[in-house]
Length: 265
Image (cartoon, rainbow, N blue to C red):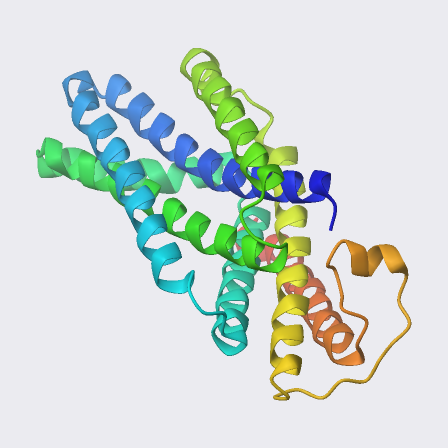
């Protein structure tokens, strides 16, 4: 896997997770301003900052715990868990490609927090939203590092680029709120996360094959597919990926049929 690919993947992971966290915090901040409760913004941002610090602490503990002796079985399980979360995030983004539905759900949660009358409730909302993304980021980056040769300069460069872009996006959000083109962003990110999930599945299959838990039947695939880690050239990995693609297409068809049903008109 080349350096550009590693940098792109690490940056995309942090960008996706960070963007959702930023959207949540920005939406809550906008809600507070509209509700005349701007005095609670400090608690909101404090909760987000606490979640970032907690995520960094979790990253340290996770890497210290799993960064010792390599265990193919453990790494395979971690990669499958990361893939499952990626598929979930991909589906979440696809189903919520209409930002109005997403924001309506968030406003309902914010309304309940205002009704509770506690500034701490907003800090907790921000903490949970940001820390959830932070915890997922830790898992995804660990899986990426293990499948691409470690915490390379390219991986760290991708993270640095994503942090810079997130800072710019946050500043823009403060000015133009939700007038960003979120629908294409959600759809493209959904597709990218799904492809990354397929890659992690292939890596997990390879880990299990190295432990002889899964058979190996070589298959002919283009070299670039192997180079980018999309498949290890075995029918077992190909079969798992095809099954996941079919399941995703079926889910999209069901979602599309549900959106066209008379009950939703």
